[in-house]
Figure (spheres, rainbow, N blue to C red):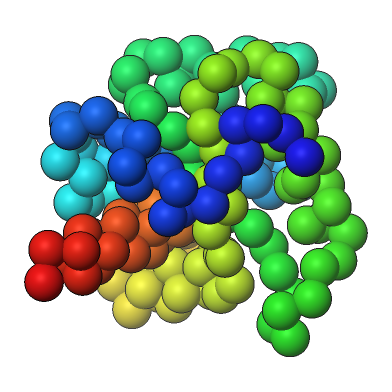
Length: 162
């Protein structure tokens, strides 16, 4: 396993006081990206990368991490509904292993089950057209994944302070 793949509980004490996180929804055709504010309270969708080949995808991902000066990446882990790991999880783990050689930033996996479904449902409730949903769903899913991790980090901080 990559040296810079860590658990969320290990990430918390390593983070600088004001540091952004990058949320990543790794799809087969696109990569949705979201970034947190420096206080790590809110994840906002920023970009969708159209996947081509690993080297180009990785270069664009690292460039985005550099642009927003992120301290770590939160990668959605597409577990099956029963919690088991299928081919998409294996592909995600392989992508992170390969990415780990390109950046010193730590990676954290976050369970992304139902993230795209939740975002799609929300967009339908907002009466977004099918074309608009297709355009934004990946980066919105990345924000959903990132927000889950941010909320967990905030809860861990409250529990330590209590």
